[in-house]
Image 1 (cartoon, helix red, strand yellow):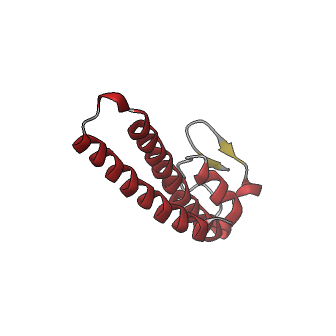
Image 2 (cartoon, rainbow, N blue to C red):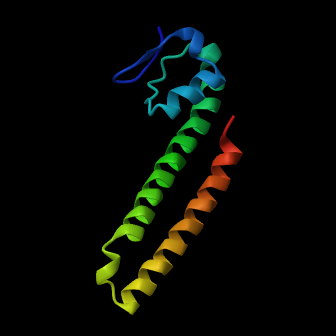
Length: 108
């Protein structure tokens, strides 16, 4: 028996806290397949890994938004739209920094 997702099977030897963390980082969906004796430790790492996986996804999304705002047809912007884009960039940059701070707290 192992820990399985749709695309990857994790061997029992990986049903540990670090194994759960790494499994979740890869986007694995745990199906309660680790032995009972290893289940709690696996879940401890898995829960942290899920949070890290989600934070990384949100950071990548903010990076893409920031790049889009920085490169969107700058020559055709009005002063108002330029100020709006600049404010959005600042807001998204602050959000990203906040997520990165949270991410550091969850990483092994």
